[in-house]
Every structure is written in C-alpha cells, then in structure tokens.
Image 1 (cartoon, one colour):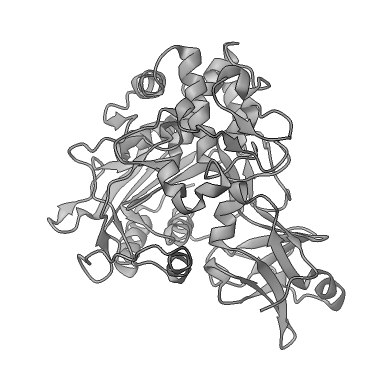
Image 2: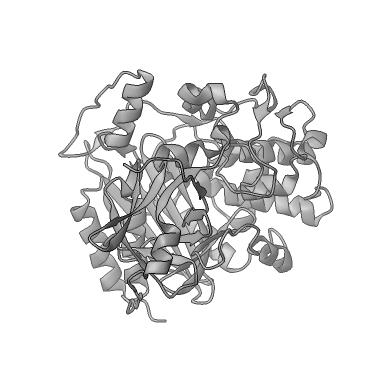
Length: 476
C-alpha cells in the first residue's frame, strides 16, 4: 500500500493539538527502509526543546520483547528449556503455592499466576515493589517472603512485570553476564542501535516525562488507603512535570531507553524476523498464540509479543508505559510490510485513542463496517448480571484497580456495560457483533470500538482479563 505522508503528518499535528500533548514522535518503516520519521511538540515544554527522532525515550514494556528475543536465543541454542522449572534455575526464589511449578514458558506469556506485587500485603506499597529509587533490584533477594501464586500456571492470564524480572535473571545466569550487558550485545550491538541504553539512568537528550491530574478512580483509591494527595505544578493548561524519577526495578521488564531512530531500526529487524538474532523459524514460533480466552477477540498472547487484529489487519507488537511520564507503542503489520513506532512523553490513558487515530491514518482511513445488532431477548436474559474478577488479588490487582466489577444492565430496552472503575464507569451501550458468536461491541465512540466476549457465565474484556458472573452480587 502507498503511504500518505501528508495525511499521517496532519493527523499527528492534529492529535498533539487536540490532546494538548507535550510531544510525540512517529516512525513508520518497511522491512527495508524508514518511510517516515518526525517529532512533534516538545521533549521539554518549559524550554521549548523540540521532540525529534533523536530524542531519547523510556520505552517501558517494549523492553520485554528484547528480553524475549535474548531468552529465545538461548532456547534455540539448547541452553534454556521452556519446560524448565523456574525454581531449578533460580533456587533462591520461593513461590508460595500449592499449584504446579511455574515454568519458563509461563514467564514469557503472563500465565505464571503471579502479579504486580509479590504478596497480598504489598497492596498499599505495590509501586515500591516495582519501581526503584536508585536503579534495578537484586531480583533473587527482592522477595524475602517469596511470591504468592494465585492460579494454576498456564490456565489464566494476568500481566506480571515481576515474571519478566525473573526471566531477565534467568537470561543473565545462563549467559553468565548481566542482563544489561546481554541486551547491549545481543540486541543493540547486533542491530546497530547506537543510541539505546539497557538501563534507565537519565542521560543527556532524553525527553522530560509529564502526566495529568489524577482521575476519579485514583482519587477514590487514595482516599480509601489514606494516601496524601500532592498536586504537581501545571506547566501549561494540563501537563504536569513528573515530580519523581522512578527506575524500573524489574529491569528486564521495562528499563530500556532509545531514540525513535533506533526503535525504527528495531522495528525493521522485527519485520525481517529479527535480522539474525534468532532464526526465522524461532521468530515465527514467538508469534504463535499461547493464550487466547476467546479466539474471536482481537488481542492474543504470543511469546513476549501481543498478537492482534486492528482495523481488520493482522499485527503484533507491544506497548510500554513508565510511571511519571512516558508511553510508547510498537506495532508491526507483516502482511503490509509496515512498522509503526509512537513515542509520547506523557503518562496517560489517552494512548489507546491516539494509537487508533494514527493507525487509521497510516492505513489510509479504511472503511469501517462494524455490524451492531440489537441484542435479542434470549441473549439478553443470558448475559444480564454482575461479573466479578476471579479470586486471587495478587495476580488480578491490575484489572481490579482499573475496572473492578462489571455489570450488564438494561435501560429503555437497550443493554449497557458498566464498570465500577475505568472507562465504563459511565455506562456504555453494547450491541451484538458479527465477529463471533460470543462477541459484543461497546458503542464507545472510538474509531476502533472495544470488543467484549460473554460465554456462559464468563465475561472477557479485550485485554485478556476474564470475570465470572456472581448471581448474588448486587447491581448499582
């Protein structure tokens, strides 16, 4: 397909203005060349320093794809076994569990049963367990009381940065080197990424991170747990300079920093099935679906990469967010031979909408034909009710905090989805879609509407998190 540079540039400029972004970088590549690369707005608002292709970005969880490649390289060379027990490789880490052993493959796929805090008692201090004040954690000794496991490994999915920190430790031990040195050698040196850093110590030329005032959900949470609310100073109408620089304690989960130019180099390598970091067959295996609660939903999990469908096009990639001020998006469309990088020096929930708008322009604003069929009486009676997050607070703390319980309710002969927190705090209408027998579309006004799956008593949101109906839970 032919890339409309003017449309892409105008869309980016419009997004920066509409959402009052500090700055943004966009890079578009094919497997052979960079097709478009440009910065918009500022890397530092106060000094009006321009955001450019050479601005250094904290890419967050896109780091996981690099850790995955480094680990897969060891698997391919016979030095690491996907079926190996984690406790055999890192004996000093204790898992508090009556379930089966966690294996290496579970760390790759967020299916280990661990979550975003080591223990339930860490709820109020979960950020301290994930973000460091001075640098990366000593992973084996970061969990003196062990790590709670909330479900049978391989049977469910919940995001787990700590799992990736452990996978990075395994890579380091097998390589007999630090994880940082491995990523420098195996990824950056191999691909010629000369302005990339495995660690997140501040360097000259990096963007300043900004954020926005807290929303209702975070304010509610702070009131409930007694946290003191400290407002940062606005540097313009809406943006607040990050008050504190947090390091990614679980470095292998998210500490890499890189320029947009280098990330375009990385994206080109991925379109070329890693450019020799691993074999093409091994790379293809990383994109095979490892977890998918409903195959008709658009997001699925591979080995280190999310696999998805966007506007009808197959894609894979990862997003990255850093506390205090950065969001990054990497999407690869192999059938179109296109890769997209988005760098934002803003920590915000706007990233999904921004991504959809940019992808829509990248694809030339294709026609969107989403069938929205009213839900019939039989379907209605089946899906009405309250759905609760499954047991296991440690593993499921993210969706509990971001959504909580979800209810399907009826108003004036229409059905609505409503969550206790998050994007459906205000109820949104839902319709039956033609994507699959259990798929419903949320009429949320987005270019790329959100899908949910309801099968039997299980509701799954298009982020791989599933909830179960509770017939005794009260509606609100």
